[in-house]
Image (cartoon, rainbow, N blue to C red; front, side):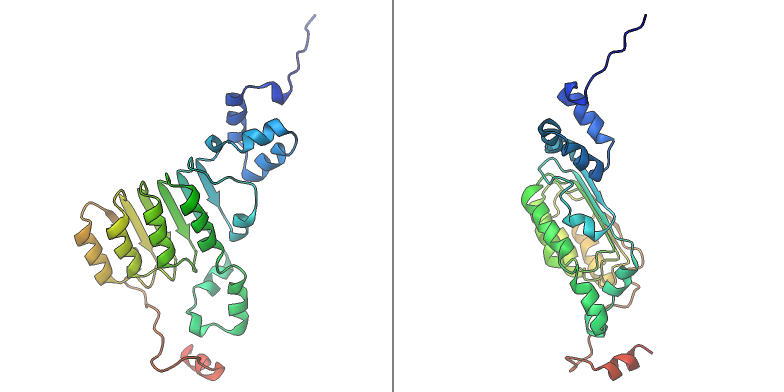
Length: 232
């Protein structure tokens, strides 16, 4: 006669629980952690969070993850129709478009400031479709994360040559830099960075070939008629 032995999940040792949690997505980890204090303690173990991936900006506002010095890889890849709205030059946006952008304009930058304060050992960062991330934010990231080896930027409309300058000044450990489809990065800026950092693996697909933002001289607040004319 066979005797069935049952074991409750909380009877597993810490190493087994961490391994089990590692197979779950962020929401599932949080839901499991709510069941008891022991599993909540596992959820809050920094060893569980060496990698974070976000597919939308709303995920950044959730409490289903942990930022800690254990974080090594971070990616925020926003693929949404709203990315196209955020990529429009500010002075060309309609009132509706500005309203849409205002709802999430500072989300990524505010999140990255938290990363700067809590994750000094970060080694890899990927930002795609983050149209409101600024040069100042990335410069602080480079200063705060001296072990950063890979920085991949795609379709980040506000990134300019100032980020390239910050890479040359503060990216001492950086080995890989991508600035793909970043229209305000110029060919001259890329040449200067290659000269300053010859060992850096630099990729800039279409960036220097795109039309950069150009605010008309003497124009502070273009009216609807002028905006319509410029968009023809």
